Length: 112
Length: 112
Image 1 (tube, each protein chain N blue to C red):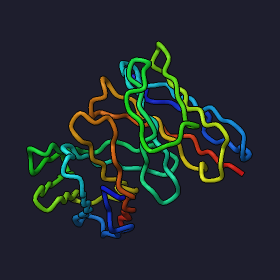
Image 2 (cartoon, helix red, strand yellow):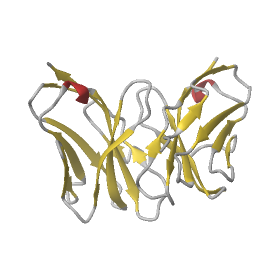
Image 3 (cartoon, rainbow over the protein chains, first blue to last red):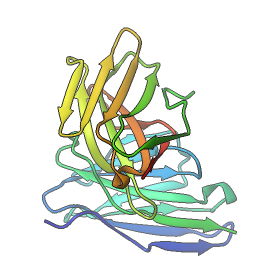
């Protein structure tokens, strides 16, 4: 079975721009969660999608938005990028939101 | 408000000895706890978990202990091997809650 794949692996954007990060969930998984990991911190929950609907959100502003597609892949969109958005963005998939989360390797976003 | 705390940023252990990583939490609604291991440039990998109805769970060289009254859990690795050198994250989840709350991680270095 394939694991969770994320693209791109690295990205540099300018403050004020918009970015889209992509995630392909593990085969058989229908739930996708996104996390932001700043340097020296643990991952912070952004939101989760279950069967194409957002079913949970962390303490992130509305300029962080997402989508889940019928094949359960997902996108994370961030508008009006700020310097503090520089971080590693991790995608995790699971079956029905159960505890067996599988994480991707992440996208390293740098905002300059 | 750091609900999951890993107070030791780093730990060095001799190969073959026991590694003990600690984690404290403040939210009494957490009912499931997980340990993840992370290598550089990779996503977190699930190691072992424990439900709040148990006080111990073993999987090979890894054992997790949960002390609910103290709101404390620990991960024991014995014997420690060089491949165990990584950052270890403690994570917690509440019943019916979709998100994982992570600690800030402990960097474990196994000295040959």
